[in-house]
Image 1 (cartoon, helix red, strand yellow):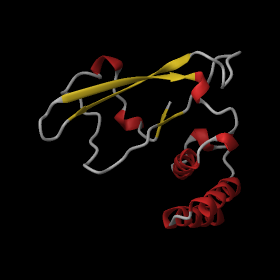
Image 2 (cartoon, helix red, strand yellow):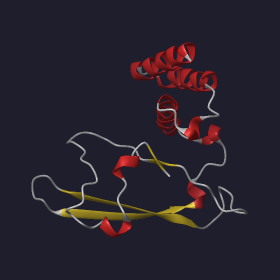
Image 3 (cartoon, one colour):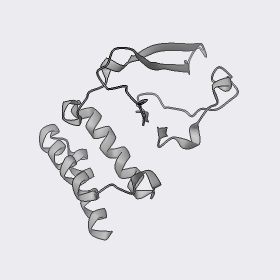
Length: 146
């Protein structure tokens, strides 16, 4: 499932349809799409094999040319343990998790805000970014209010 962009879902049959709006990203902006995947029984992270592929398609603002790229996602690209993942990935997932809690998503029913706060506090110490400090403060406030 695509987390946080549920209102921007595009049917596979509309992927190459230029008349279907999939959302805009302004110049100089980034978007991170996070998908929750459930591996089939017997498949483990770190196994060899293809998990799927990701396709991106966009229109160049100046020329209106359409560009499309496609990349394979292999199982061996997935870390087996949370602790082995990159800090930027941990931060993105932490932000998405907090958003799921705030919108009272049924997928976040078992999220403990104290655990999330500790994870972000750890990230804030390692990353040293004021925005991450602010995220930590927001999670603390939400925890106290809940």
